[in-house]
Image (tube, rainbow, N blue to C red):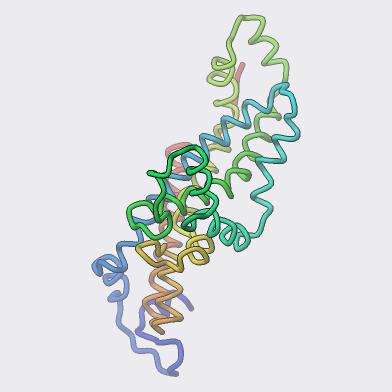
Length: 260
């Protein structure tokens, strides 16, 4: 039904649905106010790689014998358990003028760095993307940690006997073993960067150039009553995710890991 709606100019209320063909799809890629949301997604896409790098680093470190590692595991995973709306409200107070972040900067004598973290169009998307990193890093951390801990311990013992450093163990044992999980995280990074909704919606409402693809889709369908155009945007999001998944499967095909 959504695909059919995307080929019409339906407003969500009328009984009749005027067929317009591919006009809605053309509008998404030609109207600047609609196409601009793809640029916003790039902030979250870049942040997802920072998130993956941090998650992989902490998963690797905490997979070995480390003091208080169970405590650190809980600290890293805990943000993912919190409701997204609650996190957004917390970070509204964190980023607001004279809020937590500004108070920390003032404590260290860096008042010159204080600014409108959510009101400045030059950095507001960076602030929102950083919030997403803090929230979702725990998911990638658990995925990486589970994959690393499934590696037989004998491989590490043999590597240590051969004089391999921690970095060499990561390069030649850990990285090849968790290659499928890294591929999965890449797919989640692409789809997640396009499907961001609750954090920018609660924190800024999509104002000052922070509207994401999903926020724009919802506004188009339910605020502007252009269900046909909103449906076209939803279909485009689905197609992008399917194409990225297909490309990832071709570039990094599933194969049995063999470290012998």
